Length: 99
Image (cartoon, rainbow, N blue to C red; front, side, top):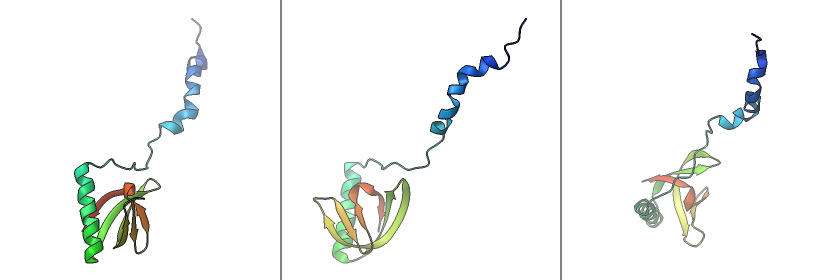
């Protein structure tokens, strides 16, 4: 009987370059918010704007979660931007808000 040697592993050589695609991606996707969560976030943002209180805003940027503790200066409902003292965020970037 003749041994096939390394010939039997040849079809799997095509998979090796694609092994990088199989690695786990560490980036965080922007979550889909329910209508209740959206309305709750809007109320917290409005409250912070009118009372000049600081909030904790967890947002996603470049696939990573960041924390911003700041005051809301302006809400733009058309562009869906939130203007903080030190940063401008889009509402779609927000992951979680706390008072």
